[in-house]
Image 1: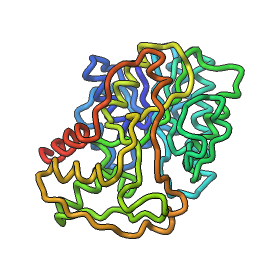
Image 2: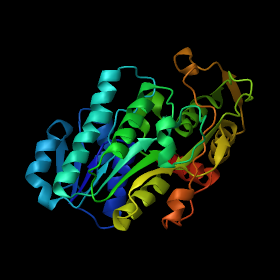
Image 3: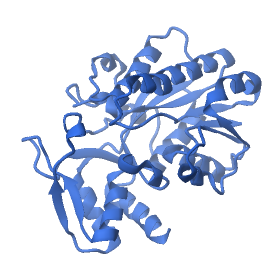
Length: 317
């Protein structure tokens, strides 16, 4: 059986669908399952068992002999949350517990790190593990991911195969429950559908014009393909970036949504909310050489291709 944590969430639920499509149907879904909106993501999926995240550790003790692989995707992902105790408990300590079980029972694991660990990118966006201690996340969420990455690298004992994936800006189906934390593509689609226009955050950095803030946007299916490939690869353990490898502007993204929807462009700017203004990444771009160097060769979708695919699914849905 394959275990997916964060199973009802955006990436976790899409990963289960990917596994089902590849004829992996003995899936154990781990989550809190307390959000009816999120739980809709699990409809139609082939799942052997649902396990509450609060009892997952003793569940592993009982069922470890049947576990083939763990994808630990679950996390508290709100970048505006400042409850450090909660983030430490759910993101850092919980992942440590899974790590220790994977060592004890010889279970391979892929876990979700984040590009939020890079902060302002003062040291660039290379996933060289010797550079990770120098990273300076901008918010407690990024710090909780950084804290685990550092802890993992310091451990003398490690699972026989483990990978941490620094997800950049992932977008695609099943994120509708994320509210403010959903991708800009999702917000653009809904704003344009409702009002015929899109309001982007104004730049508060003199080095960037309005709308020319850049992020590395990656379509969720590309993320799933890498996860699936790693499940079979099972060597070259370590921490890897997972983005498209190309920074694109928010204007590029928004124009791609207008084009995919067949609506004339109408873009304006509003002030970035003060609670995130000082914690805002104006530029991210994943250096993907490390993942490519271990043999991953599949091409990622361009921003325009991914936005069109996602927007079409929303128009149909």
